[in-house]
Image 1 (cartoon, rainbow, N blue to C red):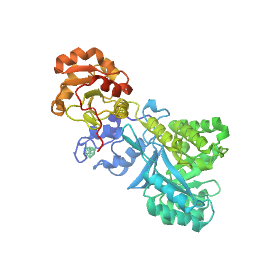
Image 2: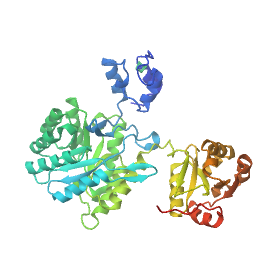
Image 3: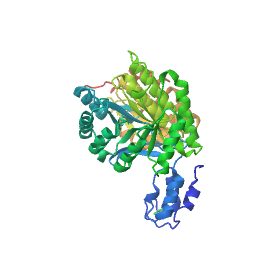
Image 4: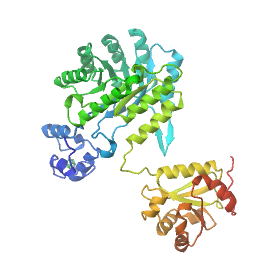
Length: 465
Ligand code: SF4
């Protein structure tokens, strides 16, 4: 179904403007609903069939599936388009680390601690792993139960339980039921028993088959029983990448074209990948495979490797880029940022609030080992040169930002350093601000050397505490 407009959604609301929701009017609610800022149940007046109908019409072509309890959950799927530039992707691929009941206690502890503590900052956002996948490799119910218990007690992030043995799965679910884990995985041979467990414990169910007809047949069976909390694992063959990726593409296109039996998120576990290079290049092969999965609509991934920088940092960064809204420029808050240990003699520099520009410039100032104040101007997320061309960075905007941030109280000199790319408005800025303007380098990597050479007012040293 085509995406409904705010007006079409409004027609499905009570239209009473009762003011009982934070949006206060039904039209504002409809607009927020379109952007997924609210849920149909947030409307205090919508009940029964009308609520059910609204929920149905806003269900995305790739259904969203929640893994975890309300305190700690991830949502996977929920996408409306094939390619992100057609609209945007909404739910970043869940990335969980594999734990096996044949691993040593030390290895399991190490992996859990890694998932709990690892974070990597990129343009102001902290990138993290989403949870753990607990796998029964021993075929021993007790061993599996022990590791599930250990995971439940030691990490509060979402969990996947991984075995094809319904009896072992049941033992794991008994321990982890409060966490609402993903049951991974049902195959044609155990579908009935695994579905019974999914119903009993109210947990989402993953199904696995490398054959698309078989996947369709399994999802139809579940949907006929009114079950839609489904994730599809179509398998991954490292030596047949083309057919693997084609399969992902077929599944996504089918979902967007409303072929109901394929309207579910795709998952891949690197543990089950066929023909993955398991020698010295295992971690690299896995990183490559994961990147391809991220690029080809996979909504949930289980990783085997975690210590190598390219297994986690690289893939989390790729995920962030793919799932960023292409219509919105990443921005940083426009204000004054002290860098190093500036004082009243330190230079005052300006830049734009495009996040990549800000973090690049701030990093270059730090590595240039100089102290200064960096005034970030609100350029609506545009980079320096683009904002100059588009009129978002000009003399009066700079003056406005200087006044709003009271920079005259921060420093006692009256000198401003501007990026080399905006050198041509030096005169206009001097006229507007009455401050002397120094034109800095075009490449922020040269700021340290530039200031050491041209700044005579002091305040440059980075003081060690
Ligand atoms: S609670 Fe429902 S009926 Fe009331 S204003 Fe909000 S959307 Fe409209």
